[in-house]
Image 1: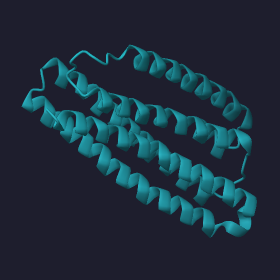
Image 2 (image 1 turned 180 degrees about the vertical axis):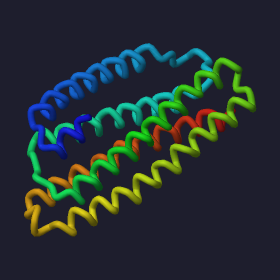
Image 3 (image 1 turned 45 degrees about the horizontal axis):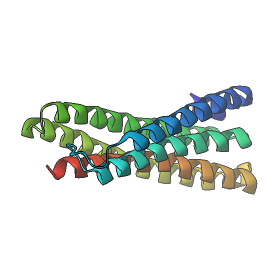
Image 4 (image 1 turned 135 degrees about the vertical axis):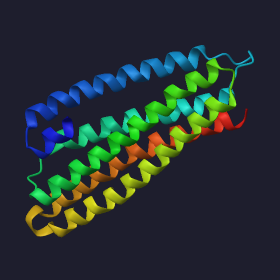
Length: 193
């Protein structure tokens, strides 16, 4: 929603959504801290503690990058030609799909744990994780297209907007990158069983 508002030039909505995203990221930090403080160190757990902490770190990085995307949009508006708008909206769609696939994989891990690492449920989780990998590749391709669209309209945009939009596109890519890394941590957790 924030990216749509940004490309539409709705600065008030971008600012409002940035505040909401920032608050949610702060809430996620509190949850992360609570989990870290309460994760047992001496009790045998179904997954390795270090793997769980690594997974938690990547989850936090998804939220941090999403907040950074919102910050970048709130800092400076940029008037964009339609081709640039379309490329950024397409990238946003692919990034969101990657995060959604990651959420599905993360939710499947609960089933894996509930079934004491049933081979069938592990296979289902692995298939979801592969979907995250495939979707992240789409983000990489789409990100490259967005960067080319930005450079293709360099004269219209001007150097400041080009730089700003490239920062935005790169950070959007990091959201998907962290989602993929987090899914890879899930893969590691279940592969060790």
